[in-house]
Length: 558
Image 1 (spheres, helix red, strand yellow):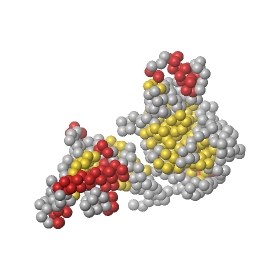
Image 2 (spheres, rainbow, N blue to C red):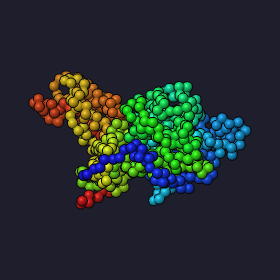
Image 3 (cartoon, rainbow, N blue to C red):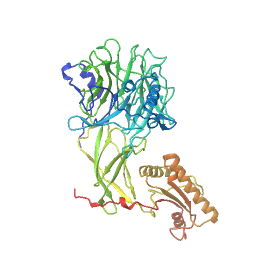
Image 4 (cartoon, rainbow, N blue to C red):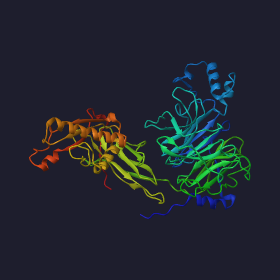
């Protein structure tokens, strides 16, 4: 298959700045997204550009959830009592009217719109826990299904400064946000913003601190653990000024940062700029370049969000009076994803069947992206630039895990085809792909067996409906009590490896040491005894949901 090299975003942006303003066509998003009465801010888009998440300010029918000691006060307080509590949370006087509170800039809720044939439509207003009575806004999307949101929401209620993460569950509900830990996080200004790289390894934050140049400056933070990032480091004078730098976003290749600033030399108010990263550790940046008219105007333009797959820059502008969301094409469309299609097959019958297809980046093994196939055929999007694992999942079945990878620099014009196997669960079948080897007469797992156990752990993470029992067996040479003890210790050692090294929950694994009780032969030679010295892993599922075994159909001839 012929492939063509992709075009550098940063290079094309430089070319755009040198050509006439007439090449830019600014488009205000439709009335399903923008309104005349309320401000729309903070656009964040899915990697394919088909879904937009945005924030609407001052909408009177906002989500009214206020938690205190784990209870929602909105359902127990009188209207007057609720207004007092809401005013208190906003920092307003207790006698503030409801209409004033509803129109406040602190009344911010997240909205979602899907791309239709010509414009965004199917607008939805998510309920709690994504929205509540406090300011709510999505800042960034990581790995397609992890969302970083503004503020932290303690279990006991209230609001804390900072950021949180959430995700969309399989049933479409949103998970309760959990705090994002950024070491030494502080800001003298409550108006903070954050950008995250697509892989979640880098954060760019807009903060006002004592070490800054005045007003908000841009800082960088690096991932150092699960939901944990390093202390923000000032990005220096190449990008920061004595004016205000805010609302950063990072291109998918992590080579370009877009941001807003009201520094001197602009069009007036806030303008949109971009810089290029010139080294590996983010210490050398190019000089900021400002977008020309009609992107920037004498009004405020800010909160840029670039979508590589469509070549469009989304941003907010007050050019029409209120804050609305606009878009402009600034680069050729370069898809970030490859379409992967195929059939889900039961290899024992060679028939296709319905199932869910799950995918996850190899570096996380968190299978949160789900496609529901009702006819045995699937079509999913896989991001370029890093390996992904995919698996078919269905109650009563056990799916094989496959790894796919597509180069970032290549353009894939055709769908890539792969079939996924999924087999009925057999409680008697050993699911270990290879023999696990131990140091002689001990429960120490030899390094040669680590890869086999890693594969098993990944398969169990993907098939999270499956529990297993690890069975240890020995030959008949030696004292019987010691043989039973050794077989049990080896089963426990494999469980410890799966739990500690791959993250399989402990409660999904049982262990049993059978010693010499179940030989596969008569132990009459060393070779036969070696076959009896084994560990087997079997699916432990006493009750199978047989109602999920839908009708299978023959694979059509291709």
